[in-house]
Image (cartoon, rainbow, N blue to C red; front, side, top):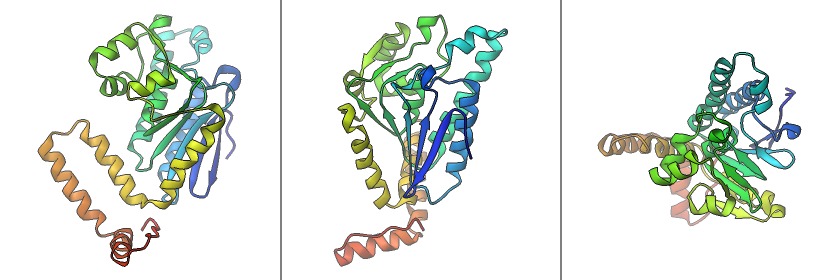
Length: 260
């Protein structure tokens, strides 16, 4: 299927989503929100896809919500309500899918663009990338991202960066615990490929369940979470991948996982 605001390419069981509104710094309009959600929902149903990479065309990853659209909207409160809900649907789909999602941040990630990156499981950024929550700077309360940001950085840092609309570098983002890896711009694809190659080899069912457990751990109390871990581990022990994993271990060879 052809999309107006993004491209989707699936190679060797990896889905590559490229936001494609470079003239608007790949900012979120309603169309991008709808199309991204449609792509993510489709990927979520396809068991053969082992990981997802999200990147941006041109100079930025995602500049946030499309301010030009906000300006032109006759009913601005209703427009922001609709736009943030469209973005939220994408974030929920990304976090709930049992596949690792990698953000390849090639430039600016502001506002909803930062929120989109934070919804990913791994963030790789070029040294020149800039980040910021941005909302306050245009007189807008944050429409997304405050929970992820606060859980990653802590209350005081969240207040410092969100309340003052502070812009920060990729290296600062790494120090805050937001970014996993910072690379030179010509090394971004290679750094992404390093993670992708790992997910091609690892057991996708176990990886997906581990992602689910990590997300649940953010809100669960200890005892219920321990029970969930026990149930999930027991269920994964019934897979062909587990059988292959323990067999390979005893035979002292590398396992060949098939996602079954």
